[in-house]
Length: 159
Image 1 (tube, rainbow, N blue to C red):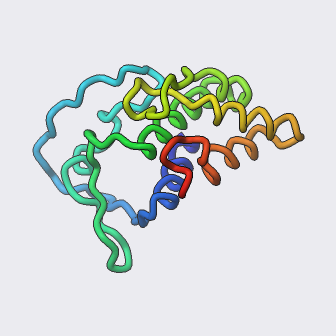
Image 2: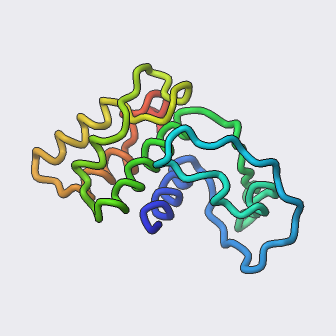
């Protein structure tokens, strides 16, 4: 779970989103429609999100724009998040075996991974392996490739 929180914070920072505090007592709301099940059991389910987070904007701090959760959004950032979610789910099961977990997700078949089932680009896997071969720890190599740089994901080269 800690990996997912760190990943969410890192991705929101890279996407230019502000991170705000979550209210302790979420407001009551009507239940949202049930989203379709994820095609990959390693990905977190939308059902894991509190209903108030799916229905209402997340207020930002310091006058920024509110954030909205959009389950229909699909782009390079969502593809990167899907890849990272599979890796972090594996890390939880294997107690931090970065080498096995970066190698385990399906490899993307196209340069538009957001149009495919959840996958990780081969370039990312290769970048990770190259950093490991130069002596970087699994954690450091993961952070370098999947959090800091992310240029191995199509459409995220400019981030």
